[in-house]
Image 1 (cartoon, rainbow, N blue to C red):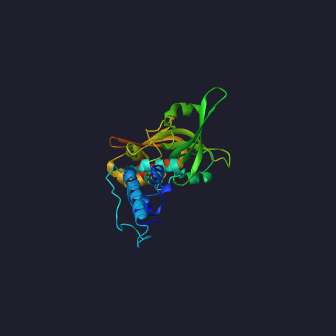
Image 2 (cartoon, rainbow, N blue to C red):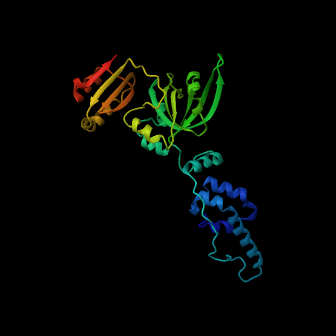
Image 3 (tube, helix red, strand yellow):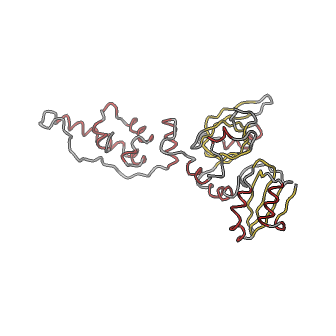
Length: 308
């Protein structure tokens, strides 16, 4: 292992070091241990190569001296100019392209931390109930289009979060409505349904939404209260809904208990919680007699409206 950038440049042989190899080493993160940003390394490749050539020339000139084999100009440093730092997204993109894997982190890591409890880990899908609607998120890859007998296009793809990956199946109607989102390395949230067949771990996509650091906080405000919100292209059955009316003080006091009650997904009800002039929406709730009784006990029968 090399302790410094200078030691690396002095010890590596000329034939193994050129602009192309330095570029790949810098972009892939192999030189992160030298504590220079990858953008700085890329901007200083000529300086690094000059340092290496100069070191070799000095070695040659001194090869007959008493100090043959010792380090030449101990303490000499590469002249490194300032440069713009590379974004985390760009680093991860380089790692995936050059190494085939994400090395330093994962594009979905920060989103996944914020969404803990609101989405399923992909690694848990194998044990999930069959024919169950759920939310996952991650990075898209591995697209394969197919044409149906009717001439419509459907899509197979993969999505990966920090825990694993799963195959996605996008039927023609959904694909046609969302085709602009299906891009390599896009970070998305997906609502889908598990297969009815045991052992088939594909997820059948019902809706998909691209997220990024600019729109994520708006999405998160809604997801934090339930499974999803207006940002998704969801076909709701509006004839089945529940409305709950709360003051801000009541919401602070009872909000956590309400969220717990709405954990039973897979149903056909949309629940609207009205807090002053703000409405929070919970989708695909199973509204049965138990939930009705629990809601009446928690907020009072006069604060609830529902329609079957």
